Length: 423
Image 1 (cartoon, rainbow, N blue to C red):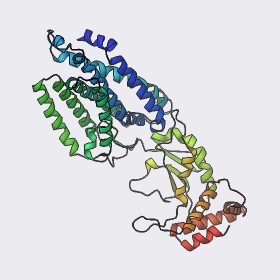
Image 2 (tube, rainbow, N blue to C red):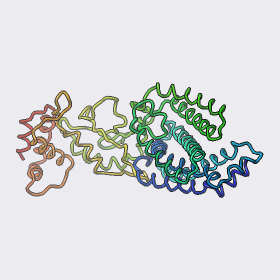
Image 3 (cartoon, rainbow, N blue to C red):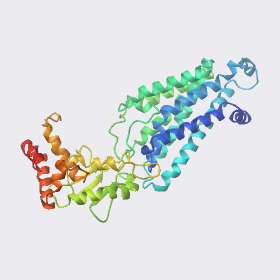
């Protein structure tokens, strides 16, 4: 069996599977570095995001490999050999799985080198998320082997791959339900969320049982298939009756705050602390501009550490920064513009009705924009209200902004309109 596996790894579909998975991995990593840059948990989660594409490729490779004998009309010849009938099938599955997984892990190893340079948090059990992803690839290869045995047509492989992609894309819409744990695709949890250990264990058991069931069915081993099928059902029941993928608790160590020691305070969660220098360079000048103004925030903090259920509106003198997709592959800040835009929560008028619908005069939006542009020190043309506001003495400008914050907090429509006309 070892010799047969070595031959398959060199001459079968396996080398092409390895190349395809490597290429797909590199492409997926290059498309969205903001999902994984600087975070081990982000890299493991992104592997699970990529399962939408990777499982389809593995199924196509497995189907092509296992249907080879019947396409060449040598299946009866192989069946006449003294080897057990399941052995060639397992060798075909193992070759594709090992090669495809190796190709993918090589691509992700390159990303891991970049993450290791800057990562500030290594905990969170991200390696279990990664391990379950590898098991998912093995299960996908088994699906392909079964398809290849049942449908020995050349078009079976690409059709199976496309059907898998569409099927998993539909399952993504189950996100939030407990049944979503049965899917290998990333369930939408944040990089700082903690997936319960029992859920990860059930996922691993489910994928192992599913793989055994598929291989037994492909090899026509009825007793083994029944045993694996019963085990798969037994594992699936506690998964689909358990908690859903939404509202996962945050990992306390991941969201532990790391703060600056000088200047206006900027605090980031430990998992995002590799960005603190870049974030501080953008945020502290804005906080310094607001320093001493009544009602203005005194510090900025990572939204990952925000207490559950708390609004991002002005509260506790804190501006909450959304850093979920704010890293580059090299660990730098992805967008200064988006980070500055988080300060818009400071100037947003609290004018919602009990149902959360904003029903305010359009002139208030103009005042809101004026206050935001002053706060962020945006450029202005000579005839804009912002230019007239900046022509006032500095104390008058700060008094105007303080008056705006007070009126916006009370949704004082008349005062907001008047303030927009004053400059």
